[in-house]
Length: 171
Image 1 (cartoon, rainbow, N blue to C red):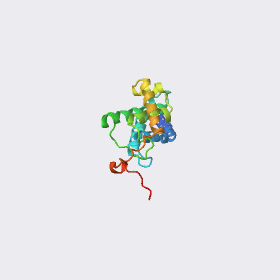
Image 2 (image 1 turned 60 degrees about the vertical axis):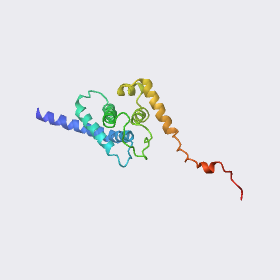
Image 3 (image 1 turned 90 degrees about the vertical axis):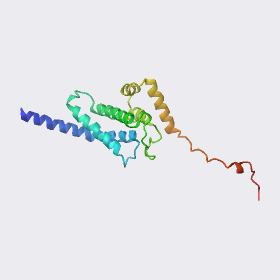
Image 4 (image 1 turned 180 degrees about the vertical axis):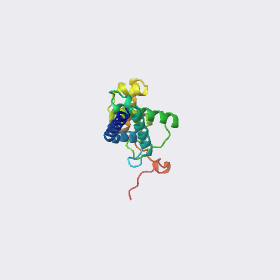
């Protein structure tokens, strides 16, 4: 009996190690996009990944044919959303790294954009996962995409009213 438990535990560990070897890089990239950190300095994303993998390992025996990557991705997304909401409020007050690709987006916009475009999650699935109407997910995704494709221009410096009325005088 004991030998069978040991061999099941070893098999479980090998299966999970194979899963981590294949999925950890992509999950870390998704977490880095969500947290809007630099890919080279991403402690929040690494903590999020560690919690996600720990949760997936704890559920490993109860997956029963479910896709472990899908379960890990769902946990990653809901953990990010919950942590952002509870720790930083609805707007998320953590300043993203300006070099991060999604730094210009709000946390909810990053979450929906990463799920829809990077992870390829269907609109209906993303809406169900986040508890939002499908139309809201579509609107947020469209707005986030537009923000990334057409970033706002920096404001022109204010003109000096004393020089605005003068005409250039040829010398």
